[in-house]
Image 1 (cartoon, rainbow, N blue to C red):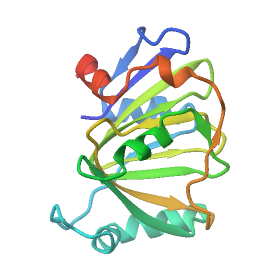
Image 2 (image 1 turned 45 degrees about the vertical axis):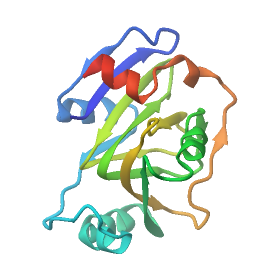
Image 3 (image 1 turned 30 degrees about the vertical axis):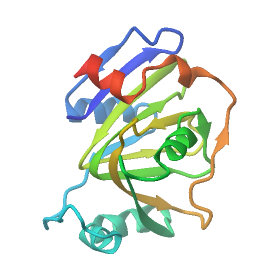
Image 4 (image 1 turned 60 degrees about the vertical axis):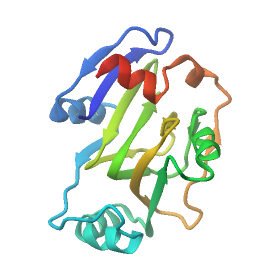
Length: 186
């Protein structure tokens, strides 16, 4: 189940908890973040390749491309057996910004987005069917967990794809990682 907690940036242990999907969407919309549900009419097998996934979600992908000028879409898949899972996780764990949207649709699995647009940190547990769009310039970080399981559609407006500008702030070290977060709030 998707979940949002909102914390004062200096008090990670204090949280407003939001569990209803519509209420999560509304709270995130106030900071410029889109949070939506994507469903497909077809059933994808667990071993579906990226082309099959992109075809299954072709209509909403094309709608977003048209509305926002996205040039490309791809699929990232990471699981506990991935040989570079630790490096991938470490790459996303530090606070950063992008000059482009960061759009992810969770086809399978889950991940934890931490959004830091102001003096609060919005922590969003995204699960299968969740689409999150983080605007350019919003400070954030992401945790896929020690034993990741996720498959996400990513959309990009630039050919470079995912390019991060790290803030150098150590705020991400003060917030719980995915497993501790799920254990505490689920």
